[in-house]
Length: 309
Image (cartoon, rainbow, N blue to C red):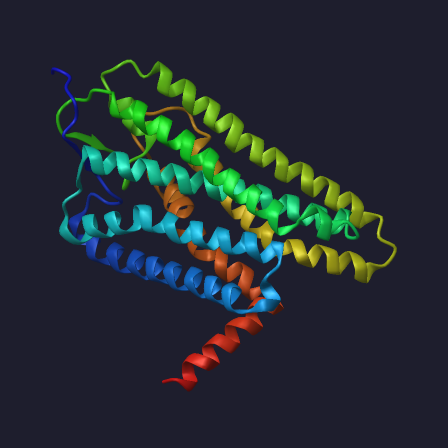
């Protein structure tokens, strides 16, 4: 077959059995709506409560915004394919989804690293914390992260747009992803693969090592606290973030730390669903259920909503 500029692809989706599509659609529609509601409520709680206008909650609001966008990048197309049974997607639509997927996935990664740095500063340098995490520095950390992921994702997407594919190639996934696309291309993908390695090394492993080193310093500092109450209080401020980190990286590793393959197993697809949809949906609930300040703010908002009904 001759190679040409792709006009579109076919996403094979989550299941090849049409009888299961309605059931799967119902489940993931509920998960998607729950993710929208949870992240929107958390954003509303942080934005309207002056007691939550601190660096920790500023970073948490950014994480909720990114998670809200992340599930919207893949969720609607997946639901549309399940509802209509048509997994076709245009080449431009695929590239657009790829770009936003890369941006929000990398922002999740970098924000978790930034939040680990914030917890390190708060616990290991409590007296200097207000000077270390000023509003200006918090803004620089977040805006710098947005700038980095935009440049990297745009470069990678532009390189993919120059590749050639066979007509109407099938992607064994429920969304457009870099790995399967590179396997389907009949062009030279050497440059794209190098960029993927750099992306994983600098943004992925670099952020993960930052989190590990931050928590190493935190645990060492907490171990030297004289009182058990002080240790418990310090670790309580990290428990939600640490839970989100473990959930995020366990699903990412299950999705991407595997030998390259031309097909996706059911286990890999389940890991991808956890990574792209379930984890961003659970994040706001992990923070709200373990945080008294967030819970009280959410109760206040819900009471206000009830009073206006």
